[in-house]
Image (cartoon, rainbow, N blue to C red; front, side, top):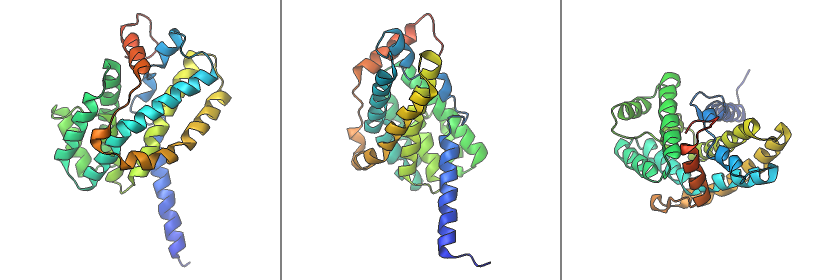
Length: 239
């Protein structure tokens, strides 16, 4: 049987898609399921009460990520492609500095460390090993966007796919928590996920064109809710 160029291209696309599915799966063991991204406090304080307010909360989180972590994600992907570890460390420091709440910092570094560890075990690329070592020796915090960017870059997967996986993860973390915290159906959360992820591709060009110094995510209510959650006496999710 003759393999055509079209067949080879389709096979490459399928392989790329399978990697997106694997590393973007909510069951990929990096601990995202144990955080609510402030949703638990939002429900306790009455800011999220139904599917409509849940959608608005998740939309805000995605917009905040696109203006913040994802700018760093794309910059880190470029640095990883160039095998520039020093630049990766500098980007990581800027991501960490912009995490205002203890919960946001804990979530990002725990997920980042686990992603780096899983990347070494599954992919085994030298750059991932070097990054894990810098995390373990406290050279760098190891925030999640950096680990995701490096993981995709070493597999020759584009930054646009890393961006989609990041945004999908933000949405599924919140919606998965909602199913355990409030009266909302799987149909509701799937409809919200479909609507929100459809917009992710539209947001990519603006994020990719931004400079690292543009990284900011002004969402004061989200930060306040995260702070409340840190001090809460009763919690289902980690702080």
